[in-house]
Image (cartoon, rainbow, N blue to C red; front, top):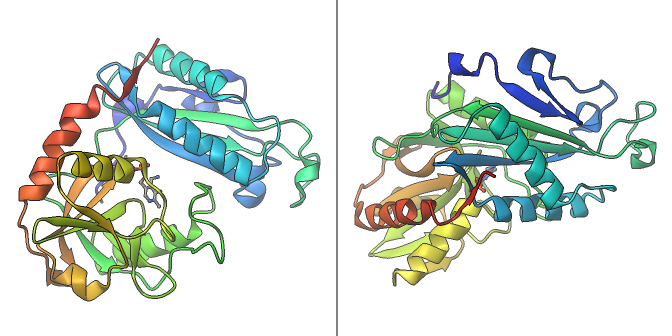
Length: 298
Ligand code: PMP
């Protein structure tokens, strides 16, 4: 397993609802919508060198998810930022930190699906933890293709970053059973969509390809990599990508807050070529802009 408990997180303070509490006391009600129906939206963020990476982009996506889910009384991005910075400062966390930020629809007056039972406004949960990136950008990760498909807008729009993660969790279980690091998920037509927790890219003859963001999350890191590639003159094309194309690519890598840019070295038992020049160039460009895209903790 690539993730494990870090003893530095033993005494961290967590923000729940309106207060900062020690992790053992951080709890939500059994009537909270996240318990009742996974009815919540979330963001995973990283802190680098005194700032929160792409905080503006993450908060914009959170607001869009909350609007799509018709949440009411949503705190503004400024209010969320204030609570986030308060939490980081209380924990003295200015680097090497991962933040799991969740906004649930809030507590219900009685159990049930109907959002009209939510009389108290959303619950904000901020979990900051000491955590280096989960994936290594040198050794890379191994994948299997999951039988679980990623949602298309036909079902639940993958552009909502919601807490109903059952599809992705089932896919991850298949990866665990197969003894590899992560699962590749296909869309409804059998084209590659994304991994259970990151987006996917393929390099072929110096060009970069990634699936359309129709059945995958429009990852912040994915967006940045597309921007960086195009600025550097590397053609980046969004298209349907089949498994055969991935197996035969010059290189395949994944992107996301959990691992930044990570090589994929094996898919379904096929060794993937490691022609890394485009990847190395993108990784260097990503490192270069990290500081510039961090919003300082103040
Ligand atoms: N895909 C899925 C399913 C995810 O959950 C995430 C991260 N939460 C990503 C991709 C990567 O997105 P980002 O680059 O914004 O971290």
